[in-house]
Length: 257
Image (cartoon, rainbow, N blue to C red; front, side, top):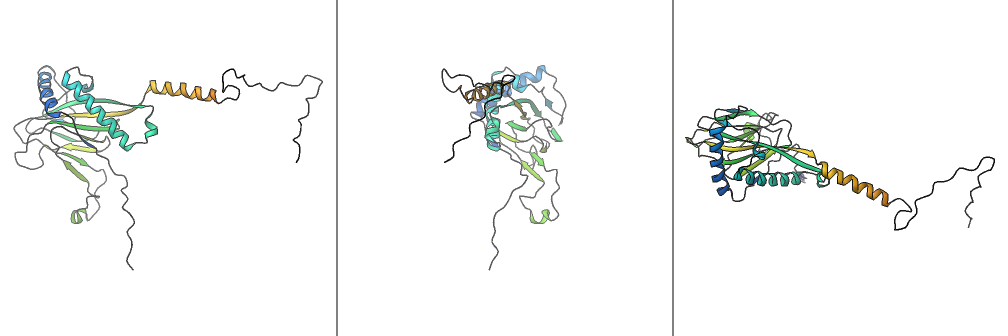
């Protein structure tokens, strides 16, 4: 008699939704021009990037046409990703608050291992991904599990127990991942710039929706009060205390069958 396999439980899995942005060829061509103009006028900053240009964290507030169009499409994908992993009922009074920035990595540019504390989702959108000069991992994003791989993983090569996972998405791809998932970007070895948008999305309470929910809840509780269910209904009467010196009338006992 052989043993019977029941099921494979994937515990503490990290969801990484991947999207292709609609009409990305046109959007990418237009946004590259807008980024070139920004680089001429903005100094940028240094965060996890080594070499290259890192914009301010204002991508979702920009007014340039391609920036605005891409920001809207990215937010649609982030909302969809959230719906796919969340309790639908819990999302009624919540909203996503996003910030983002442009990364331009020239030859030799890369991003050191890091995560994005304070957010729910992080994401990377790929505008320009030049082919590697060596055909290797150059320019790839690599995710790092904070747990080390178990002994023997190097021999069995289990896809479930690996501690590293690398991806090299094509232009037009949006990769979404939990913000706590540590990652880094391999150095770009091509002569062309590698251009991406990095994104953080926080879960926040929507004040307008919460207020509406309170109004609806109050309306519902009023509607269920006896005496107020229909038009012209009287408010329920509270019992009156008995006058001094007089006993309250005894309660009538129900008749017995």
